[in-house]
Image (cartoon, rainbow, N blue to C red; front, side, top):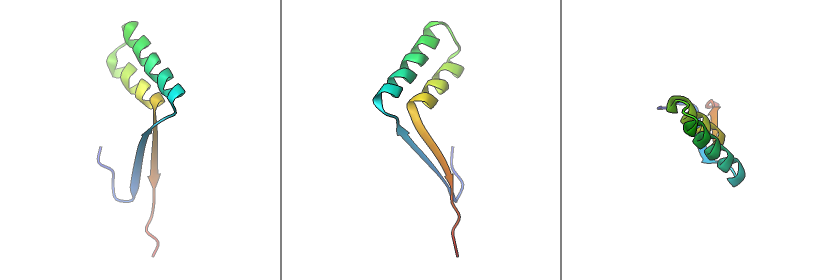
Length: 59
């Protein structure tokens, strides 16, 4: 994904306990034979802090 001009995407890991919960949830979903197309992105959304901000240049 390539952001447009004026859009900032910040991705950083969350605190350790919520990261473990996301990883454990993704692992459990894969162990229960859930499709990887669903389990892995869901675990990443739980484990990572993703912020999308839009900014404008003030003139």
